[in-house]
Length: 335
Ligand code: XIL
Image (tube, rainbow, N blue to C red; front, side, top):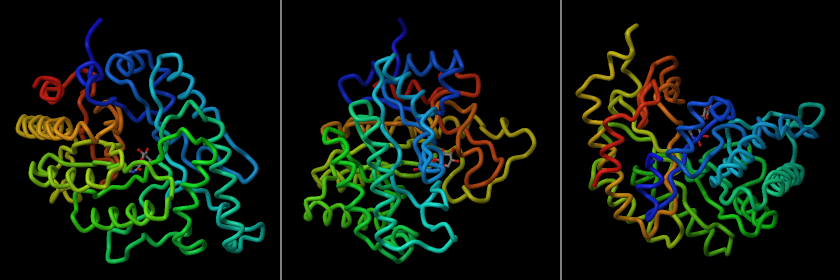
């Protein structure tokens, strides 16, 4: 059988991919997933609004489908995510009259949620993104959110404690983006240092790694990984993609009708070199990095097709729109 990413990296770290249950029902995609990857992250299936849409209703079908596919094909599963400011249903923060709930009620609800979800997948989901994106990008330390407003900053510690109680063997991550910004990184490090000093069961830091063809640079990535490595926690690249739009143009560049044409040979080359450099760094930090996950399977569909510009096609992954290996793939596996 043909070697895949996971085989090239078998002495380094598992290689994962974020997927929807529909990808697993699509024969060609399912085969590609099994050939190249040995870890799955549910892209949306375990988020609160999907799995717990009403207070007394859990919808397990989508998450179950992913976990059972993983079991059949011997893939690991990273759970994503238990507590986030997005994709959280409104009912969580409201009583029956639609008034804002108090701290004790919200803590109870968060506890119920974490206990139910982590408990259901105990022994099957080996790692969890317990809290996602709690640190602010602006001048605040923590991101303003309903969690912070109603509970206060200890919602973070509580979430980790409850996840640990529900599955003492699960590896628990704090996950965030903009990790290559020194200011943001400093805040994430401060948060984790504080949690560790309080003996909160946090075991790893997840670096989302939504990057671009021109960012981060080699030195920037090297120093970022070095800083996070010093924490003494596991470190995972949890949502890797390399946008074909350069960072300063990311919000502005628009597609013409023929969007495919915009993934020019020049951009393809830049992207290949960027992917090559990133994986060189990941190999350099192999003692610390315990997983690298791509956010989506191929350029046929990426969440970046709608973000930050709605309807603008992007080409951020290692497989093209027909699921074939791109030039960038070969730079990642040949060293
Ligand atoms: C994205 C999904 O890919 C989209 O399908 C969804 O509409 C929005 O969320 N950071 C995260 C992920 O932690 O959960 C996000 O996933 C991408 C950014």
